Amino acid sequence: MPDLAILGGPPVRTQPFPPWPQFGHPEEQLLLTALRSGQWGRTTGGLNEEFERRFAAYQQAAHAVTCVNGTVALELALRAAGIGPGDEVIVPSYTFIATASAALHLGAVPIFADINPDTYTLDPESAAAVISPRTRAIIPVHLAGGPAEMDALTTLAASHGLAMIEDAAQAHGAEWRGRRVGAIGDLGTFSFQSTKALTAGEGGAVLTNSQRRAETVWSLQNVGRVPGGEWYEHHRLGWNLRMTEFQAAILLAQLDRLDGQIALRGENAAHLDTLLGAVEGIESLAYPAQVTRHSRYLYIFRYRPAAFGGLPKPRFIETLVAEGIPAMPGYPPLHSMPAIVQALEARGIPIRAGSGAALHVTDRVWADEGVWLPQNVLLGSRKDLADVCRLGTDDDHAAGWNLSCWFWRQKGRCTRHPRSPLCEDAGPGGGWPARRPCAVRSLRS
Ligand SMILES: Cc1ncc(COP(=O)(O)O)c(C=O)c1O
Image 1 (tube, rainbow, N blue to C red):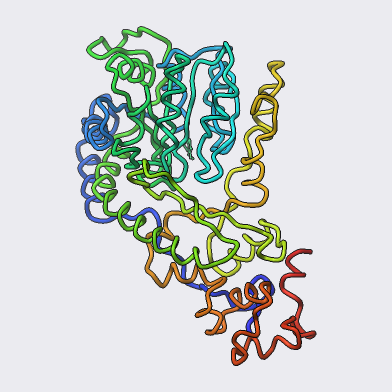
Image 2: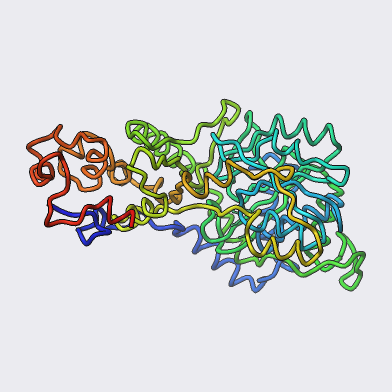
């Protein structure tokens, strides 16, 4: 009988999932075109502008401005929205550090709100509870390609006169009520970093429907120059945050692949929802009908330790990883992240999260519940998906697969398949044979 891989048994998968990024002839051709043109920077080349036009149209925005990454895209958007020192910016605590550090870098104060337990995106009620007279902006994060609750958040922002900046770093092509994210609020930001669904290794963009804001962002990423101005004419203190023409070349080719990849990830995510739906103790996230297109950058599911004999989430993830399933624990809460706490303390600002209350959902999701799978798992075959789900289906148990048997043993139902070699080995009462370590006990230790 094979043991769990974490205990020295053979892993269920020895082959990796499909690689990311995916590329081919179009990327090579466009890169060569950029190379041979000798126009390697955007001050002379035209590929950034071409990508900005195409990406803005794709996201249904009037304007796009590229920049070096999604982190500075957030800061540029905040600056273009007029956010400055002392202003409060509401962000979810369950996000990448850049959502909050962008505010800190310009002297503003991130205020943390909780997330919706079904979607893991910013909870409008929790956001409303932390509004103060100093609140100036709100940053919903379209986590994993799943749009945040834009109706309630837009109403909230409008009723308090807050700027709305969408952090769409993970949500290229996603839609809320048929509208592409990033252009629903005042400004939207994207990342093209290596793991992202649209990537050039690094890169970022800011979207907006306001020409004035687009020009401000353009100026800030181009050392304070203004469109049509002279080379040494600087109207504000900006930075050189320009993306190269090589990055734009790759992005132009990658953009042509995006719809096909979103469709495949969507089909596979729906299939995974069905497969995991049969496993007690595993639940998919549940999105409202207004999410008309989820771009499935990540597949996130909820793990219930109680259904697995109390096995802690970190050990569950280690178990999956050992079997060749690239599960990840997701974001630790930002409201207890040392960099954030120290940055606020250095300015004498006590961390203010959830109106002083604990952010219960965020804390629980990190500690016990949220498990992530990267997008390349969703770019594979049905067989790849079946491997992910082999922790609780009758078929796999009958086939004698190890994690499956472990799962059924937890349910006290190992004897359902007495002819399975796993069950024959199981000994009286469905326990693990004495000569083997008990998988679950060892994992708990
Ligand atoms: C939600 C979110 N915001 C912002 C960023 C920052 O993007 P970048 O890594 O391009 O700076 C990321 C990227 O990891 C992200 O996932």
